[in-house]
Length: 336
Ligand SMILES: *[C@@H]1O[C@H](CO)[C@@H](O)[C@H](O)[C@H]1NC(C)=O
Ligand SMILES: *[C@@H]1O[C@H](CO)[C@@H](O)[C@H](O)[C@H]1NC(C)=O
Ligand SMILES: *[C@@H]1O[C@H](CO)[C@@H](O)[C@H](O)[C@H]1NC(C)=O
Ligand SMILES: *[C@@H]1O[C@H](CO)[C@@H](O)[C@H](O)[C@H]1NC(C)=O
Ligand SMILES: *[C@@H]1O[C@H](CO)[C@@H](O)[C@H](O)[C@H]1NC(C)=O
Ligand SMILES: *[C@@H]1O[C@H](CO)[C@@H](O)[C@H](O)[C@H]1NC(C)=O
Ligand SMILES: *[C@@H]1O[C@H](CO)[C@@H](O)[C@H](O)[C@H]1NC(C)=O
Ligand SMILES: *[C@@H]1O[C@H](CO)[C@@H](O)[C@H](O)[C@H]1NC(C)=O
Ligand SMILES: *[C@@H]1O[C@H](CO)[C@@H](O)[C@H](O)[C@H]1NC(C)=O
Ligand SMILES: *[C@@H]1O[C@H](CO)[C@@H](O)[C@H](O)[C@H]1NC(C)=O
Ligand SMILES: *[C@@H]1O[C@H](CO)[C@@H](O)[C@H](O)[C@H]1NC(C)=O
Ligand SMILES: *[C@@H]1O[C@H](CO)[C@@H](O)[C@H](O)[C@H]1NC(C)=O
Image (cartoon, rainbow, N blue to C red; front, side, top):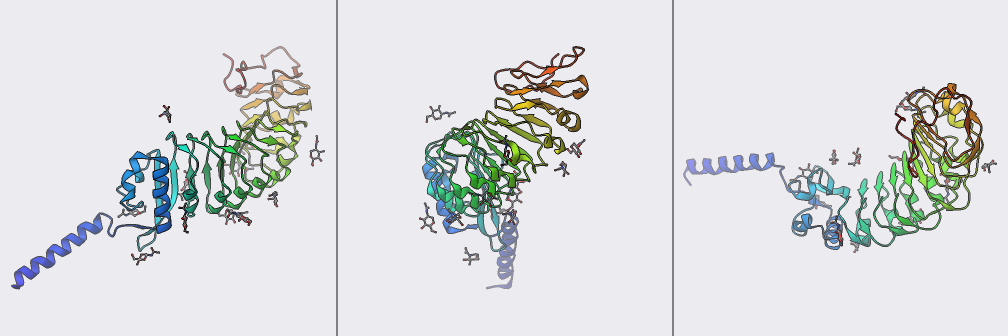
């Protein structure tokens, strides 16, 4: 070969390697088990935007399921050898029906899993406990039924669990009390039965707790005592048969307190209103509480709803009921 040609071949190879590395270098190589699992999921859920997943690597950045903002989306974590794992899976509001496939539980590197707003059938298999790295699990409004498996407790890193608006049955599982990393727990609009397990008292990192619609045995509020980080506390229609605890006055970040539709009794502790400066909404409607509030207990910006109770106010100078109860929704806006 004449030297000039050899030089041009070298130059071409050099330029080509720069161009291809600039576009991401070597192709990604997703863990074989996860690749197979995701392809099974695509087939069963018939996610049309994922059709080419059958022939390409899931963690290839240029594919439609890698576009952030899509309702059906994955994210990957890759090592310097371009070996990748699937760390996030979102199939949100995709009208997916059928059971949750076993293949899902082979995605054992998932950190975030979002399956909310679908039309699944059947329950959550106990194999869900193999997703031990999960930090966020959204299965709200997804058509699921049956019991919540105690294997959920294997997800010791879990921080957010949204399971509301499903047809779950059986007891609200005590094992959830082991998930002490939880900051956001929302389970309502189901057919689960109480009581609220006493060992939920270990969930002291909670900032949002929304439980509701528990039938079965009565619940007691002593489990709340150490949840001092709560911003939002809603226990609606949980058959709570207790007094409103005065320890709530120490929850300095508490902003939203909804205890409506229970069997709360005795006096309303006015310290809860006067000491929690961040409170904007209190709703204790439809309970057996009594006592009276003075205008000193209420301040501008606080919405207080206590219809359906025996509470009264001491002075007529200011209207206390600042909004009108709309069905079971809380009183959030000020009365004009
Ligand atoms: C491989 O995946 C990583 C992580 O998602 C991404 O940053 C990279 O661009 C991907 N590479 C290719 C060639 O798709
Ligand atoms: C995808 O995962 C990577 C870690 O591999 C992370 O840095 C990135 O923020 C994630 N992307 C989105 C949109 O969450
Ligand atoms: C990781 O990547 C290297 C180099 O690309 C490859 O030889 C090896 O088989 C990969 N390992 C796994 C577990 O995929
Ligand atoms: C969801 O699927 C059902 C039937 O499978 C169909 O009747 C319904 O219109 C679909 N809804 C949406 C929003 O696509
Ligand atoms: C899960 O992975 C195992 C290999 O570890 C495989 O034998 C099995 O078939 C996979 N299950 C599904 C449902 O993909
Ligand atoms: C999981 O989602 C949260 C919030 O959307 C995000 O901050 C976090 O980085 C995600 N985790 C991973 C591993 O991508
Ligand atoms: C969850 O943990 C328990 C106790 O460690 C174990 O027996 C069970 O097999 C685990 N479940 C899964 C699905 O890994
Ligand atoms: C909380 O999560 C961290 C990782 O984010 C983990 O190291 C720790 O063990 C978890 N706590 C418990 C009680 O499991
Ligand atoms: C309830 O939670 C406590 C504290 O996290 C734990 O030790 C106990 O095992 C839990 N009970 C059940 C049945 O999981
Ligand atoms: C209240 O919220 C602030 C800001 O998020 C946080 O720094 C503080 O630790 C919280 N207080 C409690 C008691 O959790
Ligand atoms: C609530 O439970 C605690 C602890 O088990 C108990 O001491 C208290 O008497 C109970 N309160 C009511 C009203 O049942
Ligand atoms: C109100 O909440 C903020 C954080 O959101 C916190 O720093 C502050 O201490 C709270 N206010 C009071 C009076 O406790």
